[in-house]
Amino acid sequence: MSSPLPISLLDLALVDAGSTASHALHNAVETAQAVEGLGYRRVWYAEHHSTPSIASSCPDLLISRASAATTRIRVGSGGVMLPNHAPLAVAERFKTLAAFAPGRIDLGIGRAPGTTQIAALALRRSAEALAAEDFPEQLAELLAYEDHAFPAGHPFASISVTPNDAPLPPIWLLGSSGFSSALAARVGLGFAFAAHINLDAAVPAMLAYRQQFMPSARFPAPHAILAVSVVCGEDDEHARYLASSLDVSFVRLRTGNPQPVVSPEEARAHQFTPAEQAILADARRRVIVGGPETVMAGIERLAEATRADEVMVLTMVYGHEQRLASLERVARVFALEPAPVGS
Image (cartoon, rainbow, N blue to C red; front, side):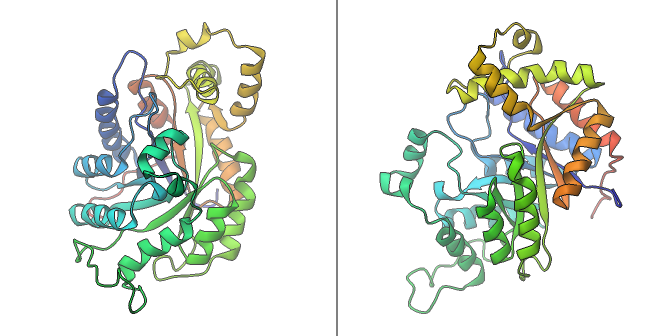
C-alpha cells in the first residue's frame, strides 16, 4: 500500500459457549479499550436480534459505554437498522451520544432487519411496516431533522431534536449490494460494504460509490470502508485451528440453528454433512484466515481492488483472549499506532 491503511473493528459482542451475553457485553467494552491502545481507528457495534451468539442488540447503548471507557477511538454503529426505528428516535439518541463524546461518534445505518422475519415483525409492529420499501424516505427524514429541511407545512417541521446543540454524527450507509452504494453516493454520505456477507459484489459496489459520489456538506469527498472477516493466528495452521469455531457457527446460522460460539476442540469434533460442507465451501471464501503476513496480504489485496479508504475487521473466534490476540496480531503486522491524545 502506498500509505498506511487505517484498520477498524466491527464488534458483534460474541457470546461463547459456556459464557453469557452479559459477559460478552463487558468483553466488548474491554475490547474497545484494547483496540484504542493498539491504534485501531474506530470500533462499531452491529444490531442483531434474537441471535444467541450475538449480544449486540442495542448498539447505541454499547456505544455509550464504550465511548465513556475510552478517550480517542471513534465509536459507532455498524449499524443501526433504520427500518426498525423511528428516524426521530435515532436522531435523538445519536445527538445525545455526540453530546457526551464530541467528535468521536459515528452513525452507520443499514436497511436489513438484522434478525428473523418474526423478530422483525415484533420490532416493526405491523406486517405493512415489515413489507415497506421506504428506506430512502426514512433516511431523508433523518437528514431533514438535522438540516431543518422539511418543506413548509410539513407536520414534522416544527420538531426540535434534543439536544439541539449537538450535531448528528457522520453517517455511513451500510450495504452488501449496489443499493446502498448508489444511495450513499447520491446523497453524499460515507459507505461501508460488508464483504463478509457478499464478497463477490465488493469491488463493483465500492468502485461505483467512488465514481458516482456527489459531494455534500457532510462528506466533501467519498469515504469507503471495507468490512472483512479475519482470523489471524500465530501462523496459518494456528489460524485454521481457530477458524474451525467459525465453521460451525456458519453452518448453524445458515441452517436456522444459531448457537453460542463453540471452542475449536468442540468444532473439530463436529461431523459435517454433505449439505453442511457445501455451506462451508461458500462461507470460507469470505474469510481471510492465516498468520499475520497471510492476513495482511489478503486485506491489502482486497483494499487495493476496492480502493477502500480503510478496512474494518470482524473477528469471530472462540474466547475473549483469543479474539484480542487476533486483533493484536493484525495491529502489529500493519504497524498501527495509537492516535495522539486530543486528536
